Length: 240
Length: 68
View (cartoon, helix red, strand yellow):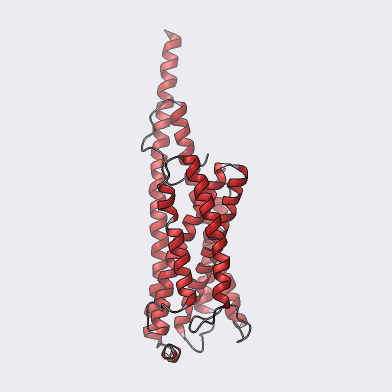
């Protein structure tokens, strides 16, 4: 059931990624200040936005889990957070590379945007040991949902606090006071954002499909009274 | 901090290394994730084959019981 529509979604994702990469390198104009290094922007910023939105979506799924007590929503929340954490790793590494190229430093500790993203990332990195520490699956799902909601609410609050802070170095993508992005750059940026949003959706669907298949194989084994090889995962929830 | 602002744009040959590095990091992360998922899917496939063989075994046992 989870695998339904995965193939067209994957094809659309690959096509959109190819289109956005082509636009980045053959259409987007060179930035007057940063030159060629600014091309990292079309990778780093969409990844960051998709990761942060993914964390919030994980929180929304967690609300659905607590309201309905349906474990399916816990699995959705877990997978959304999992993929967002992977995107978060990419954001931190690509950000460090961009910082080194344009500022001459891998990391700037007094820059609120960088540090706030690191705090959000580290907070979500604790999600896994937090789940792993609870043995009972019901309690594990419930506590993980509470964590996902609290952390998910922290993300927009954190974002607003950083926007209000007077940043010295990190640029604002949608700033209007200083002109913002020119039309061609904005078009390429929006294409990249759509491509990475599609990639996130595809990976979430892919992982949910794999979890669903694994859960159904285990149910079949139980129905046949055969021992379940490998045992069930204590961290990752199963979906049927 | 003002020194950071004053940093000039890197020449293309030097900037290219950083841009390539950033995109390669992303592709490598994606490949590692997909490789892990591929291994999981292979494990599920193997388990499914085992379950199918078990079901066939049970079916054959039942058929033998009925014929006996």
